Length: 335
Image 1 (spheres, rainbow, N blue to C red):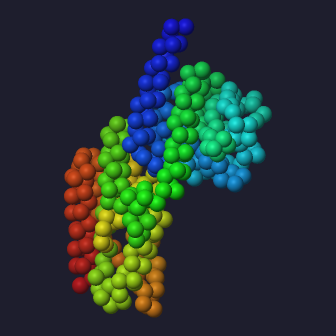
Image 2 (tube, one colour):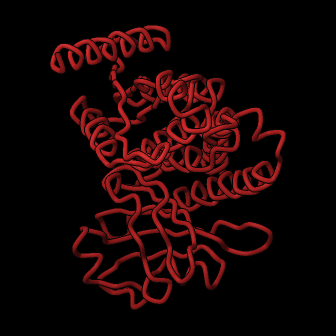
Image 3 (spheres, helix red, strand yellow):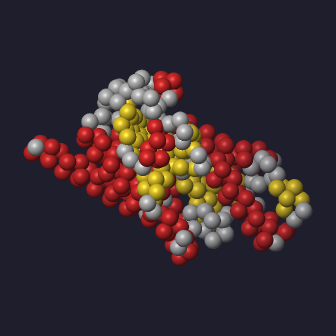
C-alpha cells in the first residue's frame, strides 16, 4: 500500500510539472495538446499518445507523439472506433487486446501494429468533446498507473479547453496577442512561442526552425496603388504562410513587411526546408492588386536550433542573415 501511495505521489509531481509547462503556453490549445501528448510518453508504458477532438461525426487527431507522431489530421469515425465509444459513453475505456475486443476495428489496428490502448474522455461544459488516448504494440500493456496518469492528464487538457474557449471570446486578450491587420500572432506572442519551443526542443533533443520572411516591394506597392492595396497584400501573404505551416507551428507578423515562423518540433533541417519550399511555392499564384494580376514576392531565411544558434537572439540573427543572402541572390539572378 505504501509503495502504491509513493507511486501516486510521484505521478502527481510529474503532472504538476506538466501543468507548469501548460501554464506557460497560455491559451494555445493545440500547443498544449502537443505538449501533453509528448510528456505522457515518459509517464506511461505507451508507444504513442494522441489527442483527438470531436468534429461532427468524426474525431480528428489534433496532436500525436511517439509512433503516431506523423498522424496529425487523421480522422476516425465515431461509429466504428473505441474513441467514439468513449465519447458516447463519456468514460475511460481499456482495450487489453485489439485481436479479441469487439469494440475496435481489428484490421485497422493491425495496419498500425496496435494491440492495446486506453482512451479517456475530454470534457467541456459537461459534454465529452474529445479523447486522450495512449497506445501500445503489446497486448495488456497498461496497468493502473498508466490509467491514473491518463485520467490526470485528461483533466489538464480539459481545463485548458475551458481556459482557451473563455479567452477566445475575450477581445482584449486577442488584441494583446494578435496583429490587428492580419490576425496572426504578434511579436510578443511570437517571442513567447519561440522561447517555449526552444525549451522543449532542448529537453526532448529535437530540432526547431525559425523562418524569417521579408515581403518585397511593399513600399512601391503602397506608392502605386495606395496603402489599402498594401494591406491586402500583407493579409494575403500571411494567409498563405499559415496554409503551408503545420498545426504545431506559429506564424506571426513582426511588423511592417516582416513575418516570422516558428517550426516546432522538427526532425531535421530537410523538414524545415520542405515547409519553406511550400511557402515559396504558394506565392506563385497571382492576386489582383489595383486591377492588375500580381505575384507576391518575399525573401525567406531559415535558421535551425541547435545548428545555427541556441538562443532566440542567435536564431533571429541567423535567420535574418539567411534571408538577406536569399534576397541578394535573387537580385543578382534578375539582373
